[in-house]
Length: 448
Image 1 (cartoon, one colour):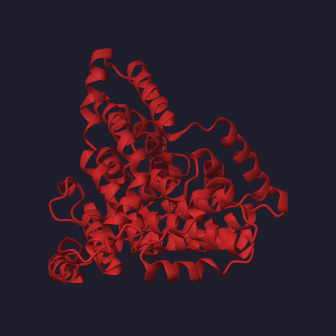
Image 2 (cartoon, rainbow, N blue to C red; image 1 turned 60 degrees about the vertical axis):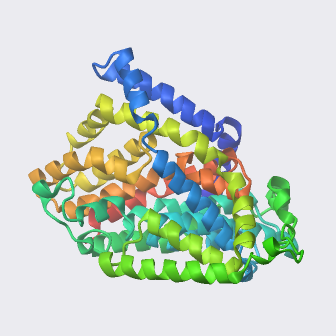
């Protein structure tokens, strides 16, 4: 049944799913119209809200470009690439490859969403290449979708935007709920059991069962991204002349800069604990990549190659900033959330929180930004109904990432790395979204 469901959604996605840029434009128009009809904002006011948010993601856009290029360059370093290729060569069928890719993506994403996004994408690419070399038939779009599936679990883990926010002294809800340690959110039994259910069972098993079994249904990487099958010489652009300029591409520059980087990393973690925010992850990726490529020019060549997939991020993120501006500044977000929470009881509040967060995530695909909008309302309702705020934060995180399987916003980096189109993978992602519903309802309602 799961395979048939995957086939149905995949066929639908192949036919009707627009490119991510068109999806962003359509969502912009829909949000604008909803703002006019559901709020008292005028056309001029909605235009102001749109522009008011348009450039709010500029720094985040650059962070995402950096995570893409540094992560890609790190994964293509000879030592790392060899390890990934060894693991990627293990599956002997498409179903095994899909399940293994999903498991790898989910494990890394639970620790850190950015790390999981890049590892999942690179691993999917290497699975596709290894299968081609070994003559193993697999369905490459399904493997890439599995590489994206980790984005459905990250907000339940230690990189949870909402969990880290409320655990930080001085956060914007401190007067209302105080400081809530991470042991009551990401490391609570409630969050850990829900995470384990998704990572160890729901996601990998769903992808295993979705895999086509007939050979004529399998399409490998050669049908979608043949450009990646050509192994490029990493030394092709290296100046091998004996000039002074060429000899300056020395490993000693790398040693000196690595010394500075290690000193700062030690300071960061000694001051802040295990704080893996996006900036420090990018910092670590950058210098690990530099170390593994050994010289500055070799590393620069790897980054240049990786940057080819960043165009989607650069163009589309401002439009999502505009959508977020309209949703938050017009009051649409409050209307959506209030409508859901008006029917909540202590028993149903976690599931209603999950669903409302999932709905809002389609319009505000940023965990931190969404928590800023939804957090005050959820905290107030949780206290009124006598429900643990930590429990509600976990349910919020589950919803925030659940509809990532419908929203191609976070897939942009993965699409750039793997060479497929959104329509090739979103049908499988939407199948996972649907299959996961009863598991979310059971876990969020009954887990201790």
